[in-house]
Image 1 (spheres, rainbow, N blue to C red):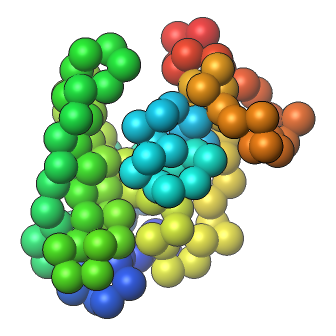
Image 2: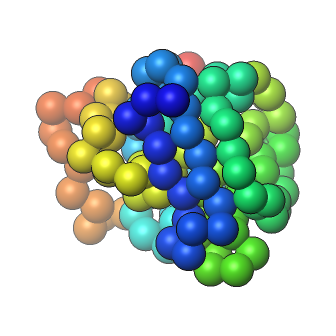
Length: 136
């Protein structure tokens, strides 16, 4: 496996990805804000088939703004977020950039759901903004 490896804080969950991510972005939706405990979630997207996971994440499901299911995976031992799946895109797995062994690899291409961004969230003015998601 390549350089795209990571896992939770305690090491109970580890992942390794083949190839490069298909997309990297910062999501400012309220669900990501709550899940990250911050202004946004920095997400790296890979095809599910490219990610090998060891350990057993626990999954928590919510209905996203579209009404479709979003599942967030986390370590039951240390609570670290380690993944996100979307009902409307079941072939992908989102990996939190902070869970990467080398977070410097993360290079966001855009900011999503910026309509939900907080006024104190200083986004890069050069990065493309999508107020309500990818379709904007």
